[in-house]
Image (cartoon, rainbow, N blue to C red; front, side, top):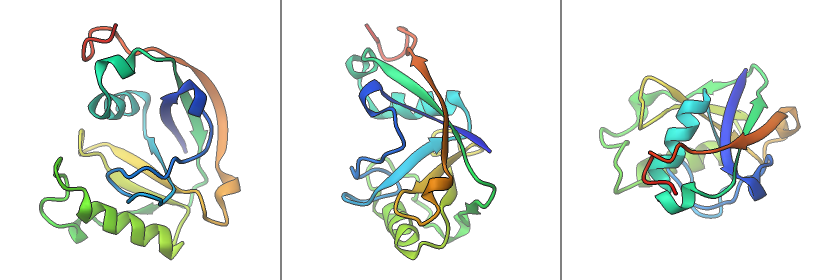
Length: 148
């Protein structure tokens, strides 16, 4: 399966920052990817300001092995998509990371719930099976969040 990630040019590699986000708490290394470039774009837009979107970005085309675990969203609390509190989803993601049950976890996107993001456990023994196929420049359209 092919997935995509858009990142600043200087971070355009298969590495996670350990910064907290929707599915991981601080210090937990998880790589976020999306099922298509447009979803990866939207994920960046909601988490960055217009000024940040004017920087130099790359789109990473990544090949995943076929063994992908899918999150059972029925196990999440009703407010799992909250913009104010990531704690419920961070607990799920951190537990998944620590269990090493799979290399990849398919989760719904909060922005487009019918589409998916794919979380990659960078500490998993099979991480070497993740392949960076291609990187290419990506520019956010200037009409998005007043990108200048």
